[in-house]
Length: 210
Image (tube, rainbow, N blue to C red; front, top):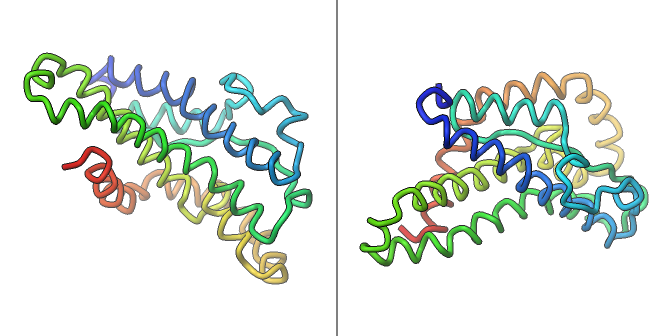
């Protein structure tokens, strides 16, 4: 169990993703929706970085459990969006993609000081804790971004997939998937690592430069 072996790292991951990464992720959803014509998130007070406004009990529990058990932050939150108000054929896909893309952006942001560390051996040797912390945050954001991009409702990737289907096809499929969304999510939670890990490793190496 990751928590027993690395209690400090587990606490940092849980705190960072619940208090920073999730709010940024959800704010990007709400902001994209607002820019595309839907004020639902704005009127609901979700255009904020306040973590309380973005906490999702199931998605937050998933995150805590995944970090405690494996050290990998898998979870989600939710931002209300009325897709009927969105402009453009791909408005819903853009809104759904905005959240995971914010995680990749954060990974790139943390990748900047990581590259400085890796480029200076003396600095790297004198700040091993900083190296470990940056590595965790980069890896965690990449994993969370990929996880949310998986084409499974209610994840963002599921919303992207459904929004790209012809309306008649979506009208038939979406109600059939809804009763199984939680089952699909649990399956992804336990089995998604086989898909996520190799992709995340490739992206991680590109971000940190080795």
